[in-house]
Length: 269
Image (cartoon, one colour):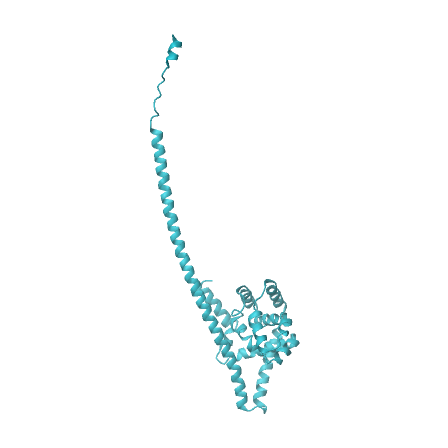
């Protein structure tokens, strides 16, 4: 797309699809999304959910970049393009569907890892290396899933729980609650910083590739100029050859004079 068309599509995603809400400073929407994904795992993949809970691995440790970048931060470009296609068709629910499908299809491999570092590293580095078959399987699963009712229910559930935490007397002191919230926000901020660094690296690579393209285009232009010069020289040489041939054609051929040999003269006599 051109710049204006691309910006119009970005605006459509941010405003019409509502994605801009998850980039607000308080990051409340992103926290709700992390809760919704956790509940989906609980309902659809209980064994995996319990394994992650046992290691104290919440979705914010691995899934925040998926939601903030629509999987563009870690996954192959071809897969990301398919996600964007579905995003335009079905809205932000697609991110939940893709995340749930990916985690479910890799459940046996995730269950093999027994500590936080190994699990998070697998989900962040190994899981995104999708083959074509796995990619198509994930896309097909996404089209078969409908999570709209669960997502609405989980969002209401999240707000109810938050209200109960605020209204009911808690065993945690206000300071402890604030520390917990600060820890959660700190984790999300760190995710944003990591994404920013990856974005800067990507921009540097793009700049390098653009410089290479400019250099190649310059070389191509120079080669084209040389080809044109050679073609002109060839045309000139062909003209010279044609002129020489014309000159040869206009010259009188040498007159051959028949000479009789003495033997011929004797035979006449």
